[in-house]
Amino acid sequence: MDAGGSLSTSNQTQPRHPLHEQPLHRRNSRQNLDRFIPNRSAMDFDFARYMLMEARKGKENPVLSSPSKEAYRKHLAEALNMNRTRILAFKDKPSTVDLMFPETSSCVNQPKSVKPRRNIPQTSERTLDAPGLVDDYYLNLLDWGSSNVLAIALGHTVYLWDATNASTSEVTTIDDENGPITSVSWAPDGRHIAIGLNNSEVQLWDTTANRQLRTLRGGHRSRVGSLQWNNHILTTGGMDGLIINNDVRIRSHISDTYKGHHREVCGLKWSASGKQLASGGNDNLLYIWDRSMASSNSPTQWLHKLEDHTAAVKAVAWCPFQGNLLASGGGEGDRCIKFWNTHTGACLNSIDTGSQVCALLWSKLERELLSSHGFTQNQLTLWKYPSMVKMAELTGHTSRVLFMAQSPDGCTVASAAGDERLRFWNVFGNPEASKPAPKIIREPFANFNRIR
Image 1 (cartoon, one colour):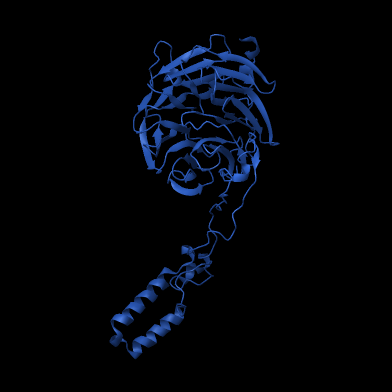
Image 2 (tube, helix red, strand yellow; image 1 turned 90 degrees about the vertical axis):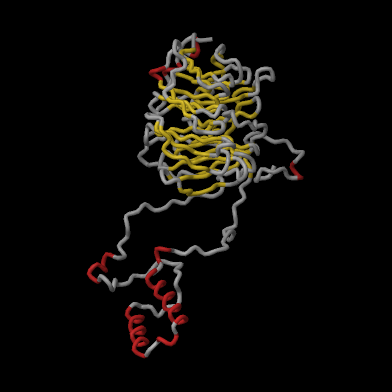
């Protein structure tokens, strides 16, 4: 395959290696320079209006011109520096004295205390081959752990890519009877990983020791397509519509069961506080569950049942700077990103993106939201919140961008698509210098070795 993701004639018979890096093809700096964009801040709109109106007056009333009026016009033009021919400006405006308010002229060109706009690269920084990636909207096959290692499921095998040294390793390969792999999720410690299977089971692995610790059984009746950790609780979502909290520290691991969805659960996200869970399903429903309301005796006690989407809800993301703000994205028949107040259940805003919303990620550094999409552009779109103005559109994938994962420092986003390519984008800028290192939580998994 070439860097664009399409099959080339010379490479069709060559073997494809998982997570093999593809060569970068930079755009020519002279491409796409087909137009000038005026600098509005450097334009003199008063002058422009004067020139346009004078030209119009001269054409409409040529007989009304008189020597006195002509002398006045020349004097005014000299005073206001209007003996110019250009109306549009394409460079910074030079310093001028404010003739209307000369006492304030010293402040006219003082620099404003605005944050400089950062450069957002329009091409991916790195591209890896991902042969065998299952093109299934309802699965979750990509995750980036706190130890800076990316996990991706390709068919029946889970691979790890270490971002610190670009090394690749294999966790496990599942046999045909139990596979393929339908979901992966790193535990908070960045060492243990959960692997959801097509046969309804979930395996827990220690990636440092490279060994399986236990298998969670008996909760689901069909494939487990979504996984989400909440400290020592592993929440699983299945094609059977069930959501199950599994306490991995104890032998009888099922602690809570949430029943609301009547089709496959494809999106799961815990809030930063660990008190609320958002779940999206193939039934077009979005639920908000409160941990304090969960009980095995009352499994249907959701906090909010949200029915505004008109297609499957896979993309769900909690806002990092406002605890009760949730973003959700709808599938091909919906195409909308919606924002919710999870305390009241109110829909705060809805944006029609024009294409299937596959995944959502909030920036940890700025008030920005990144979305990935399907047909027709298969792009990633960066939005400014709350105005929802598009800041950038990142293209390169040739099929729908099903999965996204964010690096621990919040800068880089990895995207995986149906074109069997894994791309890395430096979309969120540079991390804060004073940002503390992520906390490593190891104690909840101390009992793994004693549980089978």
